[in-house]
Image (cartoon, helix red, strand yellow):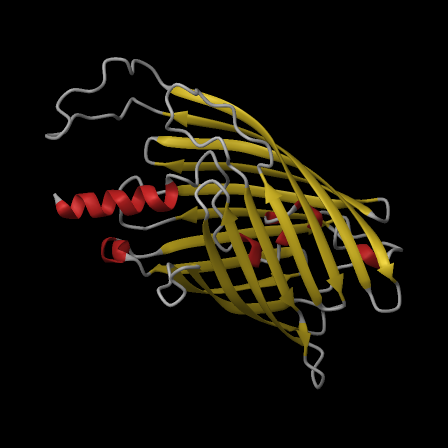
Amino acid sequence: MKLKFTYGFLFLYFFGFSQELHLPVFTQYLADNHFVLSPTFAGIGDNLRIRANGLTQWVGIKNAPQNQSLYADFRIRNRSGIGLSLYNDSNGNTSQTGAKFSFAHHIILDYYSKQYLSFGLSYNINSFKIDISKFNTTHEIPILDPSIINNRSISNNNFDVGLLYRNKGFYASLNATNVLPKSIDRFTGIEPSLILNYQLYSGYLIKNSYNRNIEIEPSIFFQYFAGDQRSTTDINIKYRRYNSYDDYYWAGVSYRFLNDQALNPLAVGPMAGFKKANFYFGYSYQITLSQIAAYNSGTHMITLGFDFLQGISDCPCTQSPVHD
């Protein structure tokens, strides 16, 4: 009984807040697609960029979370970009599906020192569902609640806003997700109305002065959840190597922890991938280091991508810093 309680507590702790509040962020953004984190990255680059992610968490545990997502963004005119995000996230008998429609505008702060500032806005629509068809009685709960007679669902609308600063190889973005409070049933008192969370993402693209085909990219990702004041941090590093055709392969590692337990990581894992012509592939594996690690074999994520319609902008503020 104690074991079941521990497992249930961890399951709810890490993902009870993830659904309906925000789409869980793993390492999708490290698959050369920062648009996952913020609308401010929409339109930075020379292509219509599409990335599809499939994630299976805690392999070996029944009804563990599953996630599928699709991201697409491209530039319009010289200084703006638009993007679309679609996702489906399931966790046991609950699931959420949704979409984000994003717009970004990029300006030059200083042409010669390559300083740029970007503004981003997303409109979000989310549908949260509970499927009662698989509810079963247990020894502890011999009778189901008779008031639950059909599946439940609710839809929410919200907005994200963000800022992005770039200076040569350095970048830093600040994003606020779900800026509007959620409408709730004030008589139940069990739902949070404040679903705002802040995300800070920063990194630096280091180019090898002796070999321009080699890049190293350390980065950090910080999340703060205003509702319960939790926060987490990812520390990442990537290695990227190009060939003479601008194809490349990369490898890296990510380390995630709660900020009040920096030396007790939640997960750590390697990543690898490659880009060949217009095709992109990435794989990420996360080893769970909490108490639940004994009951699963880790989290796996695959990213597939395609780049289309190459068109170089006249404005450097929309050109990708990767291998420029």
